[in-house]
Image (tube, rainbow, N blue to C red; front, top):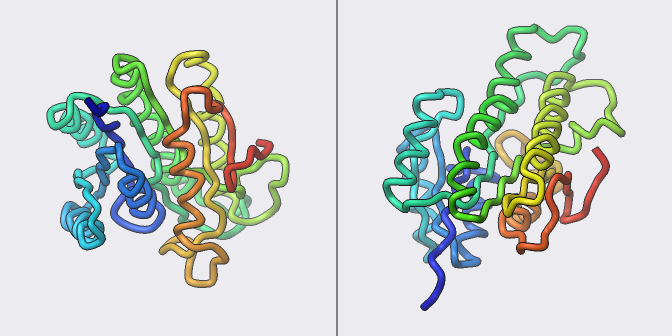
Length: 235
């Protein structure tokens, strides 16, 4: 008897890196892919595009900044499948490109709500179900712009939010210790998405590769790290 598929939720899954990660997991097989999308119609359209390629995925309406909707979405996944094994925290925003000295604190709070608090909220809800399943993979989609050791000027609020997300990764991994749940951050690099723009140097296939790799780590795989092109980078 073949093992039951792993249930994988990808936030911000209707386009860009989220959709490509879903495509890669669906192509691998062995995963029930659920694309979280703020707009149900856009999520349905994303699943239809995958279906045209012979791949199967589900959509789920999910606004990561709405606690009630997040709670309901996790409940719906458990209703449909009885488990949650993989969480890819891909939803994120970038609202400014300027100096941190000029950043409106209200904008900073908005970015933190989406890029940090919402990711932690999903992880908090997912971990108990992963613990019951005896298996879990959490991937926080970060950025090399949030790398403390090389951080430069500009895009300050975005950089600080991604550095904070990396701190969430490290802290969660430490708290989970030697459990079967692995938590890692992934940097996709400058990728041709709506956020990255058409001038970006990397395709979504390249950008999503490390995300998919971390989402499917074997039992002896790493935890608590920051990875780009499947290689560990310093925080």
